[in-house]
Image (spheres, rainbow, N blue to C red):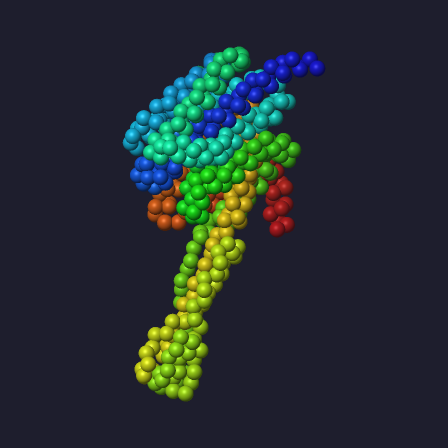
Length: 493
């Protein structure tokens, strides 16, 4: 009971932190909806690659600045840094309606992308308010602010449509202004209600703080986070144009489907922390990476129609074609039935469907030799990539990544108990870089292959690489710690 007054104060800070992080994350992923809307409605004529850059630029800023902002939070306190960040990032959002070119849009996106550093601020600010036994729960609750991406994908499309009813060309400009006001209001609330707190530590130089980053383990954790967080951020934006182009959904429906990916992935992060506490982060990561491999392999199969050679009809003996109809070829006295082209089956089949028919290539009174082709076979394999199945798989991989985000950060205090801030900041930076690079990589893959599901091939390769690297590392660690046991296992096998 002695802790209840301090915990009450801590819970208030946690509420403010989570609220601010949720709004910041919503702003951080704004371009996913806004840029798609602007291109889809012909307001700006940007290429696929330019769209990829606009989706990635805010993520880049929020990533590369995480480490210095995290260090600044340790020195100045979360209230000072968070409130300043919220107020400053509202400015480029207020200016975004004035952007009239790709360069201006990219520049302002770069500056409002600083809201992505809110994760580093909130992690440091939340942790100083809670005792060790509360750290996991508190940070897990704070991490649920990732669901802010769902706010954007769910609400922004409807708002854009509503604002564009009376002014189709300029109605979109209201959206960034609303987002700017949201940051402004939360910043003022922070100044009024938050309390600054700094934990006194033995001062360290910057080189001393960064020396931990020489460890390969830091970069391995960073690669995991590049997948589970970076790809999550990327797909929070990439799924909207994906659904609109592949399944011809409306902007609003595509936004709802993207929300179904980002909302559970963000909210389940707290559950991922619980699983990591109960079963161990390593075991959880095995499940996360394995499921990511399996699900991305299923998702990479594109919506497609393949036409290839099928079973044809050949003359059994030499002769003259005496009659040709749509259903029959007659050579001498011998009839050869012809399979006609059937009506295309209804879409929404879960499994691939096959259609085969024959196309007549001979003419009336033509002389044919034995085994000469009378009608060539044509086979069409149609795979609809059923939208409901696709959506379920997307939601499942999002949930898997949400659990993985918590599991990665559970590793850090176990291996780096005195360098949580620096290591956590570096891992977060690498994860954020995933959110920057992935949309750009996806756009280049789409341009090169012409296939939307090519992005899932990249995810499959990355997931497989993470899984193999983790397994090799753990195997080496176990062999090093238990050499006698490993020799016995090798001998028995």
